[in-house]
Image (tube, rainbow, N blue to C red; front, side):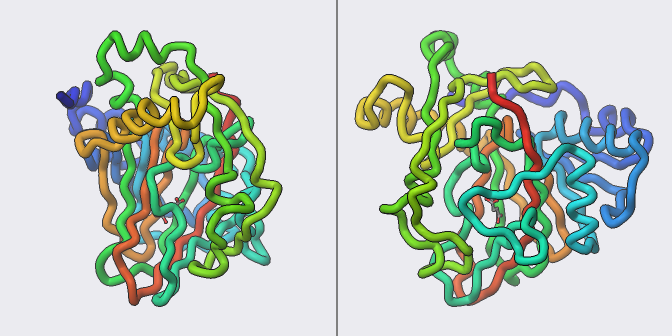
Length: 296
Ligand code: SIN
């Protein structure tokens, strides 16, 4: 049974810890809304430190009513690290560090339409991504996030012991490899099945967050087909259980987008899922992804 551990800090106490930004908790499991911040501006280091603290404490943070040029979006992201260029999806012509997550009214498939962490198959997967809503459907197209610390903490001690030290194989092959569905045929994403997606990396199944020191489950949907030294068939029951567990409703929050919203998530301890329930409408988002470190 999932028993959701209550927050250690009450919302009003947490808000008091910030001098430059407003932080209001959004979901019981994760998420906070940040106020008093205009992301088109340059910030003092102290403000950036508070935004980073809010991210580490809440895992995904939301900013409403923003107006940013692509240059301002990139400049904000660079305050948190170097930027990642997606190895399988072409970035915008003028801004290769920005992926345009576009779904046209008659596209069938949406980008990110299954629970996953971003490009976890890299040797050094991202710290996080900053997603800016440019155009959203009148209804639908929400995004969900899940808290991978909570999911880990709510496993039994026996299960945690059994998983300890296990390694998982990550690969882009199923989504972008030669036998994958061609994104350019049923979606507006610029990506084609290709050989370069046929590589594998291995990461610990339980990772320690490099900044908080907390442990979390680190499994990433279709990017993680098997455990190291096991077949896919042998791995499936455990990985299926872990993905179901990781995405239980009490571990999640759901954001209803308005144009101008920005979500910044910590990709090291969350998964996310973009719903594909707005057929007949266009949805356009700009995503910038910040490099991270090798998981341990
Ligand atoms: C993604 O997986 O990065 C896309 C999320 C979204 O479009 O909501």
